[in-house]
Amino acid sequence: MEMIVEGTDKEGAETYAQIFERILLEMGITTVLERVHLLIRPEDPLFVISVRMRKAAGARSVHEVANLEDMEGGVMVSITDENYAPRLLALLWKTYGRDRVEQLTRYEVFVSGVTRMDFWEMKIDPEEELRAQVLDAIWKLVPEGLKIRHTFSSSDVLTIANTEHGFEADWLKKAEEVHHKMEAA
Amino acid sequence: MYQVLMFDGGVYKINEFYELIEDIGGFVVQKTQIQVQILVTFAIPEEDRPIIEAKARELGGKLLDVPLAGTEIVVVGPTLGRHHMPHPICDIAETLRRYGAITVVMGLARGKGKQTAQINAEEKAIINEYDAAVFVVGNFRECVEKHKYKLWQDIEVPVVATCGPEFSSLPYCEALVCGIGRKVERMRRAEEIQKLEEVASKVQKIITDRRRDIELDPLFVHPAEIKDRLDELEAIQENLRPAPVVLHVDGVRAKVPYDKFKDKIADLEIYGRKLREIATISPSRMEGSILMKIKTRSQVESEDRSRAKD
Image (tube, rainbow over all chains, first blue to last red; front, side, top):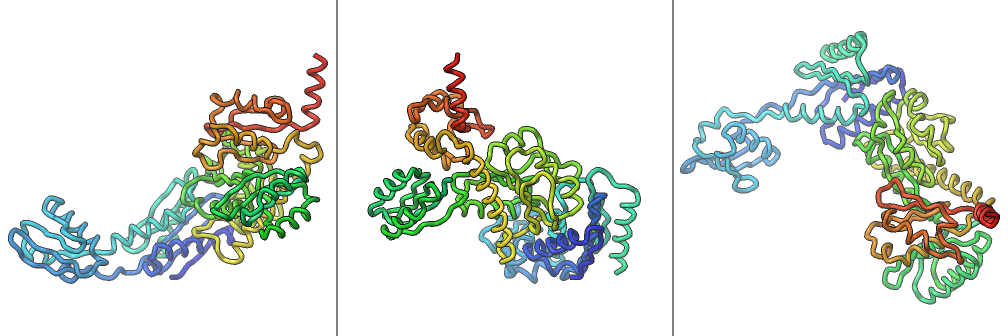
């Protein structure tokens, strides 16, 4: 992960870069980010963090992470890759509703009123979850008192500008510049 | 001046040890017995330490220095949010506990931010009840030197400030430890532990100076003597709060409600005097506690004289 630190308080900004690395390490998502740009001007105050995410491992089909067996009244889903268990369960709940999805054991789920073929095109996408985790790491980093926020977001770059009372026009312009620079990188 | 020490040894002939402490004019502050092992925290005149050392050797125990025993110290952070807690506030509090202090951790209601950071009168009054305060602030130089120092500006008890950037000094604090700042993990590396020790030694110096100041016009009784009497009360013996009686450098905090127990406590007798005559008894800002500030000998004598005139 490449870390770019910019700002008027070099020492303070460097410390925040280290803190961010520690937070990512603690959350186990160090490999998710490709590049991070921190712009910190405590005298304004302006705290901009921009992150560029790596392409997440592609979405996986349900039949790649679970065995599917047609039974009377529905399908028995036996999860074979436990890393995907919470996400698969959430996906089944979202698609079929809690009434039709019954979790029998930790890795066995019975879905009523469907056949194996209904799962054929169903995919589990890890990107959304990783994005949520990255966002959580950013909330953990940004100083607590900087409550006014503005977000710039594109497919793989997320930039959040933070201040205490209100943004001045050129601060947001600067944050946007950082965002575009990250997109172009 | 009194020195606080801890005896770590067995219960065999421990009464001889207590008698010796009493004979040389010392006090037992706390006893913790675990089967046949016992930890005794006590205060003795510092010139009599060799006598106690000899006795401890004779009993096969060892003596440890607990320079902060008999003090209550507050560690204050801008908020109790995850950005400021639990690191390094808890690590500092833990280090001070190891040196014998009772510590309290406190977060301010509106301490976060730069220009918005503030401390209210109630919070100041709470902090002023302790023997010393440690303020833990963050990493930005400009923020600390232009804004955050205002948090401890009006605090009356001695303040140790800790922050990330290096400063030669900061206003309104008695001591300063730089190089701590915000942390997201425990302070366990050698240089971090050294910083914690530095905080402890600064607090220690402040407390020693305060004790020396008090020695110039000594308190009428030592706080441990009041604790001894309070410990005899049923309300204290049945109290389930941790450390129901806490010693301060110049007084005592008893964790029982003021309205219910103020008269009973004020009527306690020490050296033939009522406690109300030799100490100021007031409700603590900490709910359900009573604060006692012991008057100095000269203060008691002058009050006696003015009473005699009336």
